[in-house]
Image 1 (spheres, helix red, strand yellow):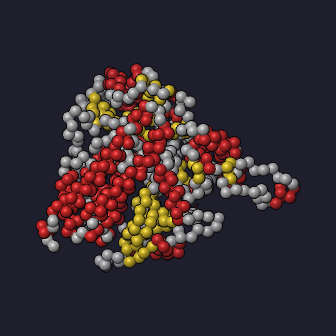
Image 2: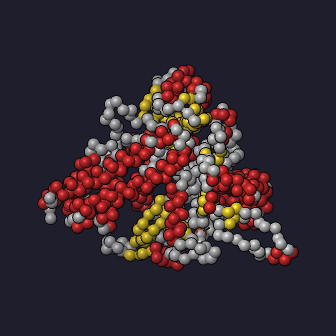
Image 3: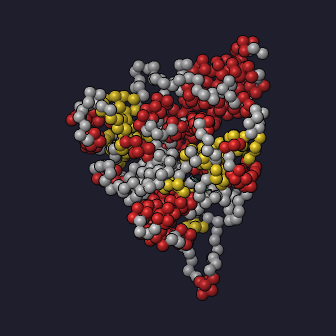
Length: 634
Ligand SMILES: Nc1ncnc2c1ncn2[C@@H]1O[C@H](COP(=O)(O)OP(=O)(O)OP(=O)(O)O)[C@@H](O)[C@H]1O
């Protein structure tokens, strides 16, 4: 049927139903994000965390609603392709004035791919590529703030502008000492500019909405002087309910990458034009993929869509094959990567050897738990994909053999499109940032020998960071389950992050016990576990033999983290969590806090340990202490 023979009202009604579905989604998403301000003002931390979790579910709910409506009202699945093609064209028409066109396109894809057969997943029917430009998109409401605002202070009177800026967000409550905070931030900004003279374009640009997460509100912007641009973020916290203060001034791309890391919970931000926020943030962090910026803003489906486009683009412009990932192979997950691409692909195996006692559903449940939990800078975020297809020639035979052996149910090799190209189709995979497995990182230090000072520093750093990672996880109510070194990775800046989720439990579900005293000599000598152990029993004193076989590692560990071998440490944290305490995590080292040392960047920081050349633009380690801290008010 020629296109113009299609009854136009059907296609346009379908397009309208889809945009209605998206608009409802974004209205609810935005309302929930905007409420973060009130939750912050009223110090309702439990509600803030709950909202962060629940918002993640919104998208799938709305897609399902819309899919059902299309089926019910338009029998969408039975419509000929001409109707679908027209629906896409009508939909594009509806996006011309739209403020979130890129998100709306992705929503269209999500709904359509639930209804159509995958042979229609091409640009005629879905948005394989974007149709609408988001460049120069701004609000039409002359009375509303644009996405970012500019201030033109005098360099020697920065304080006044900073006071105005801090007050301009209309936060309820009062600043403990606004003059002091403005002064501290002004001094820090001037330090960043060093001896530079004030140039004609000297200005401060700040994003119109604050970024909320857990107990913090972050003011994000940049300082421009001549050709120099300095990104910055100011965390605003509560000293006591209703009493605000600026806790630190974070500067430069690296600090911002830490704040927006893939290993943290998503921000709540009230945005009319998310693409403009992404564009501004990209100017602060040019190396961070746009996919990850959308993720950090809670727009995970857009992040996933952009990631997939990046992946296809990368495949088209590279030639290296997928291979088994370096490191010790997992018992539960089969992990592969492509050397030129900084992500790993994880497939759940079909069988798990003893002592693993789990199932595909349980494993997926654990990954889902992590997705919704605050990852506190210590757990990698994952994207979940179904039916990923790659050209067969991009896989080594060794990797194919590995998948055939361990995950045959997840593998299909066929020319499913009948276009002469044989593809490897992976039924289900998680994709996450690649890190250097911590065991390999330590091995590098062992190999260099005891006489090598840099290697010694690397070892010491790895052990400290490892303990800090566990302590942060514990404070976030996560027991990693399997704490072996190989289950942690090291990011580009030497931060240690956990990535093996199949055995995690809530700390509050565990029973931390001391090893009972032997009843007699036989018990003592037996070498076997002679006391009874329930499923959730954990014996911290027994961690040592698994983790601390190497004497250098043992020494470093005992110097910094001996408490992890003491059941009392675990029981006490468990107690705090049970009492409802929301423990805070600073996405910056303690030494960066104004209260600690005036917030002078660099003070107290150890030299960058990253002989690590991991690819992850990630967090900077605070090697002196875990980032966990109790709110100053407590
Ligand atoms: N994000 C990552 N970056 C780099 N390597 C990784 C990453 N995730 C996993 N790996 C590699 O794959 C291996 C197996 O991954 P993972 O620990 O997730 O699997 P598992 O089957 O759950 O392991 P286990 O047998 O300990 O339960 C790791 O030991 C590591 O070498």
